[in-house]
Structures are given as structure tokens and as C-alpha cells.
Image (cartoon, rainbow, N blue to C red):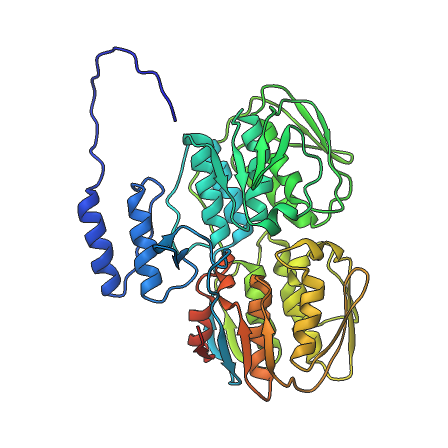
Length: 457
């Protein structure tokens, strides 16, 4: 960042920043006492490195610390190229107790973006999912200066912040994992591919925009959050988007922050020049993550799930209804993230066949999630077969166990863990640490519920 400084007298009251030298020492002593306090986005650059290091050394995986050439590398997301993944053996054991899911990732992204538009940058806990920390870091770049927005593996960060960067006139480069940059990105205006990322080269102004709704709803949500900041009015046309509950959640959060959206046929009319009202950030439990515990409870494990709002705007609250009664055919057009846990539920319904449909876009997630889910269940002794847009799962009485790969997909790692109690033999899971993407405390909670985990690496 280059600046020009003009001669001018300075006056006023200023608070000195917290002591960096003491902060390092306090973090280390807190960690030794078993405490890992939330970080602050305003902390000096060196402090997050110390925080990540002590968390990694004390066994709290997924905090972006790994050994590399010449020492320890801090700042990578778990599963980065060259990192040794965490492999575990999961022994069959009954589960029981009270489980609380992490805070909602889908709502957290939207709240952070609206808060930033209102000039507020709340601290983000180091226990937050990797995707949330990526969005928080990206907002600090867009509003505070910097040339690169590192998205890691977060599709929400990329698709939500690209339109915002264009609205703010920020010619930055968005970087991420190779898999992320391969994923579907419809309707790019003023964005140029470059080595290792996407370069913003154009400005987003008011006007009429049309987005296809059949591949992803995330860019639609990104446009809804960016266009109110344009000077001119806009119209966004997105007929029949998939994952409609996520778009509705975006509109609801925007309206909560004082933004006016006018629903019109096939889209929205969006007045320009709007101001976001600064409000306290509200958080709630994540229904997508809770679905794994709900499935275990539906399969007879003694788990009570807490921390969920029954009036939540999250579309994946549908998991509760489906766990109570799973029909023979389940459309996942609006709830694609529910496929892995619901596939496990179907896999343990003996002699019943359940077909999951309208989920072809899952081939473009962290893995080809349709193929990977079918392969994982089959490797454990289940019967699952890919279809053109989903899965066909025929239930068995018990799974066998075996060795499976997470394929770098957090939801597949959680699927393997939740399958272990129903296997005759242990499950060896390769790449277990990718759960930090959405549920950093998953393995801690799993153990507290009675899961038996042996670390192999």
C-alpha cells in the first residue's frame, strides 16, 4: 500500500494499541492453561501467527499451521498442497450425550458482510469455521487495503465478495485452492482469470443483470449484497434459483440491516445509494452441521442436539423433518448439503431404497460429492449408486467398516465419522482434518459424545 502524506497538524485523543510483547506471552500462557481466547481482526499481524501456532501445538487442528521447508508455515488452510493430512481410526462405539453444532456458517457470512458495509468489523473467533475466517479476512482487505483476497476453499467467500469488490472499485486478486477456482462461476463481468486466481478489472454499477439460477445461488446472494451500495438503481433477474432458501436468507439478513429490496417477477428491484444500519451481530446454530447429529439420533444413538432455532431462516432445518420421516424420493434442489448425512440414514434402512434427486451441482463442491459419497458408503459395505443427478441408496442392516478417503471434503469426513458406530470393524479415515472448513470442533465434540478416535498421523 502506497500513500501520500500532507503536512498538517494533528490533534485529538488516540488510544495506543494493546501491547504486542505482552499479547504474545499472554496467548502462550493461556494456551498452557487450556484456554484459547477469541482473536481480533485488529490484532497486529504477528499475533494471529502465535495464536495459530499454539493451537496447532496443543492439538487443535485445522488452524493453518504445518511444517514446511525451513520451519513451520502459518496461515495455510488445512489440507493445503504439501501438508500431511490427519488420518484417524474410528472404532465402533455407541454415541450419547448433548451435542451443540457450530454457529451457522451460512448466516455468519452474510452478517459479516452487512456489518462491514455498516462500518463494523467484529472480532472473529479462532474457533470459527475456516470459511468464515476467510470472509472476515477478505472484508478487511476490501475495506482496509491490500491486493489479494485469499479465499482458501470457500466458495461463499469468493462468490459473495467478488461483486462487492467490483462495487467498491477494488482491483484485487481473489486466490484459492485449485478446486475452488475450477468450480462453476456464472455471469462474470469485469473479472479476468490470472495465474492462481481471478483479477477484478471492472466496476459494478447499477443496471440490469441476469444470472442463471441452475448452478449456484451464491453469486445471486453476492449481487444482492453488493448492488444496494451502487449509486444507481438496479434490477437483478434470477429466475428459479437452486437453493432458494439461501437466497431468501440473504434477503432477510439484508432487510434486517435496513436494506430495501423489492421483489419482482423473476428477481428483484434494488434501489441504489443505500446505507446499512449498524446492528449487533446475531448468530445461531448451524442446521447443516447439526444434521449429522440428528441422523445419529434418528438411528437410535442417545444424542440430544441443542443450540438450534426452530424459527431459523436456514433452509437445512428441513433435516429435522426428514430425519423423522425419510420418503422414498428426496429432492435436494434446495438443500444439497444434506446429502451425506441423509445418505447415511438411507444406507441403514434395511431393504428400503431411497433416491436423492436434483443434486447434480454437488459434483462441483470440494469433491465430486455424488461420486465420493457413493464410493465412501460402498467402501464401508453399504449399497449406493450414482444417478445422473443424485444417488440411489438401498439400506442394509449393518456396515462393515474399512478404509475411506475424505477427498478433502469436510462433509464426507463427518459422514465417515458418523458411519463408524454402525460398522462391525473400525473405519480408517484419510484426511480427517478438513472438517475445520465448517466445523473446527467436530472431533472434540465427537469424542465428547463417546466416539473413539485414534490418530494415525
